Length: 218
Image 1 (tube, helix red, strand yellow):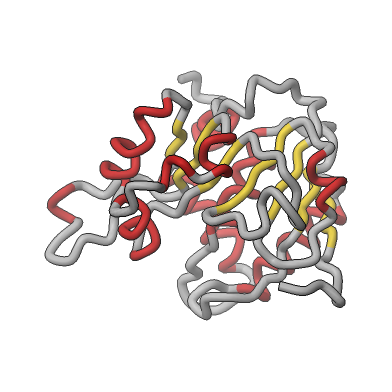
Image 2 (cartoon, helix red, strand yellow):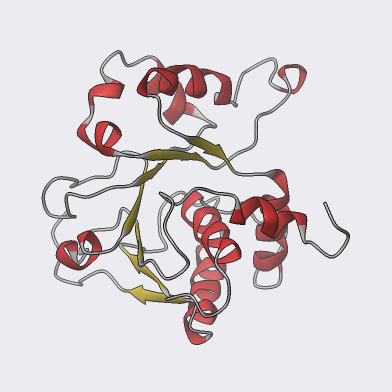
């Protein structure tokens, strides 16, 4: 790779967002209630997360990329579920994103936390692309969030995918439309710092955050 090429941005640019051009519209759909389903479905590419609650109904019915957390108990449950590949959101996705790089087997003991190998084996029969986000992206995420919080931040899957998207799209591309981001959930994520980053990306014209409706029902 030439010395003047940023390897992180090159890796993120290599993500196949359904072969869309830089002018394609992208909807990033989180799992908070109150999503503008019709607006999200109208995008060229629709990125969803994990169990995608409300998919096929109140949160919309299109998905091109599905991000699946590949560390922790959630993926452990999925690989043990014989019906996982038959879920509508999994069947309809054109590609999958695994946000964490694969841990070496020797580092995944005594209690496994990384299920990347199992996830790749589970998804292989679908014959669809699976992208594993690089460790360099995590370093960049911690750097970006570290300026907005104390300690070593643990970025959420939504933040990692949003960062990868913005790094992979050149300046001048349409803003990524973000729906269903409530910045709440597992207390280990720096939600206030992530909200601040989204706001700055919005001010720069790279991302447009659509807050969940306050009167939404779960």
